Length: 180
Ligand code: ATP
Ligand code: MG
Picture 1 (spheres, rainbow, N blue to C red):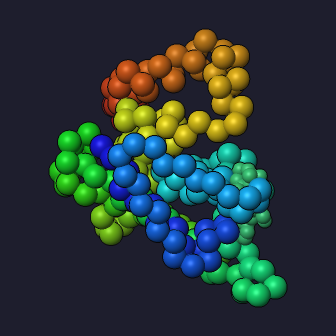
Picture 2 (picture 1 turned 120 degrees about the horizontal axis):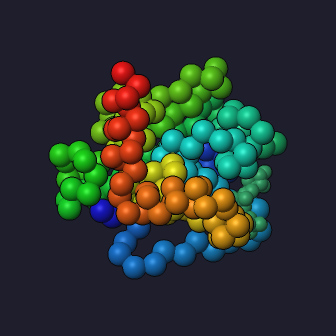
Picture 3 (picture 1 turned 30 degrees about the horizontal axis):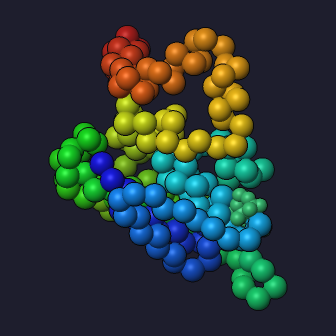
């Protein structure tokens, strides 16, 4: 699995459609303080289904939408798409290319799409479960996260290892079947 590109539009500091291409190896984002570097990792978390406004460094979900400058008017919605090369079928989705999109309107309406087809948030969560890339994955390590892992309660730390070991899916399915 390889992240090919990230498309950001109307999200935080990105009023215009911005496409970031990723290649194999390391990609570094550099820029002055406040220029929007961390907003890129916020966009990744967000498209993967992050629901915590605090994690997204906002006070309410609407804050992810570009809120205007003296030169530019605010946008009506934010949209982020993550394009993934799935030729190795690491995602349980039978397509070489998988595009996950999240859209959020000022009205509070939200949309999730997988390859342009409308899905539910839980479909996005299930798609990434056990891949390490999902909302609860360990692929985005924010400031302070390492400290949090080290000082976490052992049950919470265990969840991180379960996700890494790829067994969260089975625990999730067991809980789902018991719920029915
Ligand atoms: P540092 O080097 O200090 O970590 P950074 O490049 O990571 O900086 P970010 O935290 O990504 O910077 O960006 C912060 C900027 O994003 C702030 O100037 C803030 O005003 C702007 N910003 C956040 N949300 C929005 C929004 N909804 N609309 C417009 N600008 C926004
Ligand atoms: Mg930053």
